Amino acid sequence: MGSPGYVPLILALSASCFQADTQIPLVIATWPDQVAAVEAWSSLQSGSCALDAVEKGLHQCEIYQCRGTVGYGGNPDEHGETTLDAMIMNGDTMEVGGVGQLRRIKSAIRVARAVMDHTSHSLLVGESASEFAQNMGFLSEDLTTNISLSMHTKWLNQRCQPNFQKNVLPNPETSCGPYKPIMGPLSKNHGIPAQIADVHNHDTIGMVVIDKTGSIAAGTSTNGLTHKIPGRVGDSPIAGAGAYADSTAGAAAATGNGDVMMRFVPSYQAVEYMRMGIEPAKACQKVIKRIQKYHPQFFGALICANRTGGYGVACSKTPKLNQFHFMVYNPMKASEEIVDCI
Image 1 (tube, helix red, strand yellow):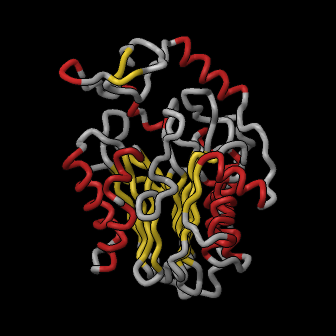
Image 2 (cartoon, rainbow, N blue to C red; image 1 turned 180 degrees about the horizontal axis):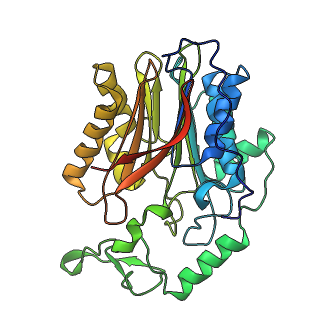
Image 3 (cartoon, rainbow, N blue to C red; image 1 turned 180 degrees about the vertical axis):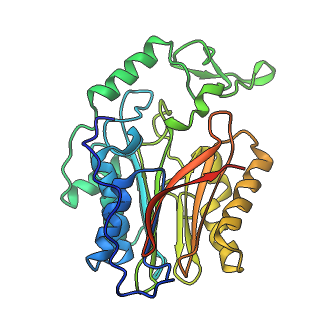
C-alpha cells in the first residue's frame, strides 16, 4: 500500500558463532512482511539486544506501511482518521510499553518504547498519548494519505457499510449515523456483517525475538480495524493479548480479530502452556481451539517461541483463509513459512 520496494528476502546468516543445531538467535514475525524480519535479524547480527531488535523491526514495518495495516495512511476509522496501536515487552524485566489510538505520530512502536523507558506506566491512549509523544520529541504530523482518504470516501458512499455498530438506530446495516441506542424489547442484535471478517482489514505485525544471550522480547504494531468506531483499541497494545514475553518460558504474539482475541489473553496463555513444557506449535493450537469454542468463525493467528528457540504457529480456518504465512530467521534459515489453519 504505497510502500517502497522490499529488500531481498535472504540475508547471509552469520552462524559461525553458533553450534550447527542451535535455534537462537531467533526472529519470528506474523505475515510475510520481510522488511520487519530482515531489520530485526540485521540488528541482532550487529549486536543489538532482543528488545532493540523488536523495536527496529516493527519500526521498519511502520515506515513501509506493511500490508496497509501497519503505520500511517491505512485503515481509517469512522471519521476517516488513521490511529495507531503498538506495544513492546521485555521478557527479562517484564516491563511493558504500549500506546493505543495514537494520533498524528508515525512511529507507534517507538512511542511505546518511550512509555516503557520514560514512565512508570504500561499503556497510554488517545490524545494524551500523542501529547506525551510530542513531549518526548516525536514530530506531530498528518497520518492521512490519498489512499486512506479514498477508502473513507468509498465507505461513506456505500452508506457506511460495513461498520461495527449494533443495537442502534438508524439501522447500522443500511445507514450512517449518528446512532442512538435501541432500548427495551425493541432491541435487536444486529450482528457484524460477514464481510467485516476479511483478514485484510485488521492485520497486526507481531514479532518475537530471542537474542544470543537468551533474552526474549515481543511486540506489535497496527493501525487497527478498518472503519472502526473512533476510540476503539484492539488487542495489539494489551500485554498478554497482543503479545507477551517471559525469558524464563518463551513469548507469543497475535494477529486477527482483536475484539475477540483480547478476551482470551492468548499470548499470555500460550506462554504459560510453554512454561508447562508444551511445545510451541501445540501451545498455539490449544489457544486457538479455546477461542474457537466460543467464536468458531473468528479469524486469528498466533506465533509462539520457547526459551530455546523452538517455534510454532497456529491459525483459525475461515472461508477466506486456509493457511497462514509468517517469517522465520535463525542461524539455520531465513525464510517465509506457511502453516495450515485448524
